[in-house]
Image 1 (tube, rainbow, N blue to C red):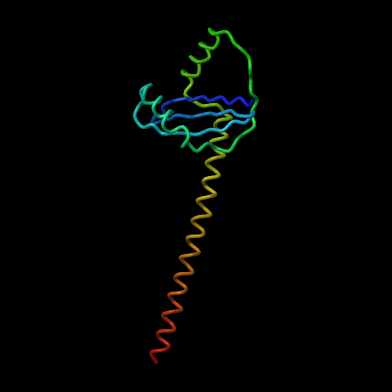
Image 2 (cartoon, one colour):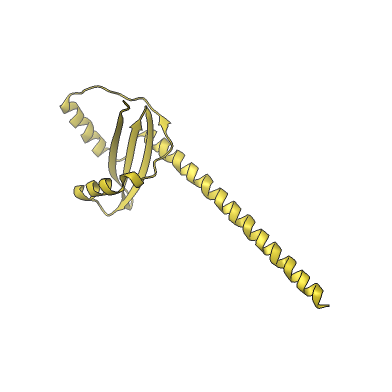
Length: 138
């Protein structure tokens, strides 16, 4: 059976609070970034996860190594304290977010190019129609 694990990191990135969802499935990491605006309360985050998790757009999966081992609870607590103290996010997560950003950028470029071409065709059609009308008028 496949094991899927998830992690949510909430941090302050001037001027908004940001949440980064990390999902590891089949040894591949995918990430989604969410802007919260004002500092979210615990219950607000919980409600957000319950209502919106399946609508999140995760980045393409990036290969990562998965560590499966039971650890000392005090050590885990120490690591959590370090993560809360550290305001950044993991480099793998950053790579996954960057990959998603690049993918969305190329999609936007393609759509814009198609719109530009359609507008050129429309303008060309209008010019041709005006020419015909002027020609008929003589």
